[in-house]
Image (cartoon, rainbow, N blue to C red):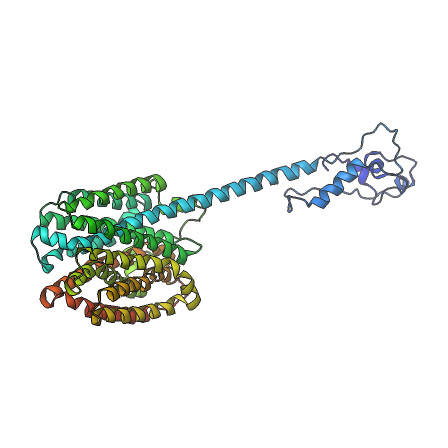
Length: 505
């Protein structure tokens, strides 16, 4: 009520014979006994500078409008004085309605941006799975083309390991200097260069060195994507399962194509398809994240900035000083090593021990298909049983199935068992990363997860290389007992990882 005259509010009550409108607008008469009474201090009409309830209830608005439009019972309708009009209602309602609509629009924009970013990272992981799923079916073709044995062909895993570890070390420095978006694109460009080198089937030493470049690029992308998703506020475990499910999907699709090319004369042309996927990955990452830092990207999805550490010592020292980190890194090394070893060497094992023929490469697709399904379809079971407890169950069941592959000389049983092992191994890595987000300092999370991922990717080179050495000395039959030992080590390491605890930032 911005136009009320203060002189009309000198009395604490209106005259009984006056209408509400007359009382508000008529000046007091000198003959009025109330005016001749002792002077009372005038009431001050004050109005709040900030509305505590900017949007009045519907019932209140209706009541105000009724007061404005309905004349008082005893009012003199012949008076020329206009009724007082309440003009404050529109000024209160309109800005709030507009503000609410803007908030809804911004909320939708945040959700849309978040999903676009997540899908881009899933495509990035699809390419990583494609890369790892390619090697196994092509090993027989590589051996035949270059006339090398198990030990020599295993050198591709060694150089791949060097690339992974180099990326894990460089990730922390590059993340601080370049930022999230630039590091992702740099890693994807490394893959483009790798596949362009491998496509014409270069000399064996060049082919081997190209794997190091791919390992470096994949390590950077893996670290950044895991750190980004792990830093989100909502549904971290489920999103990690879908993210790594994309990896399994790529690893499932790659053997289907690589098996076909392994039987062709130009087997290396498979890398042209890989190069095409890598180019699209680079375009997607550059257009979605636009070379921005992680805080800028998360702000576009409605998330607050990440936490900043206050420690004066080196970030490398802070990261490597986390005791739980090393248990999880070693677990990651063995887990990823088991995953890639089974997905790769199982083809050679089936061909030589079960006489499966060249089409045995499709068994590798069955393994990675099970891996994908396990990461997506077992989310409900992980939550119901408990992520820490259910991992022990998965590992024990996988060991039992691995023993059947070792002892039961049946091609079909082995193929089915391999697929179910993939199903059980699938949820383990997302559970590991989700657990890391609960017990590690958030401001070190990208670096820590990068280290876990980098060491894990090194395992995808170390264990297959050891398998090649054992196969050269004892035969490919040594694969199964070696896998049983490594899976048992996973149980022991997971028991050593600290349980959920309050994170100290």
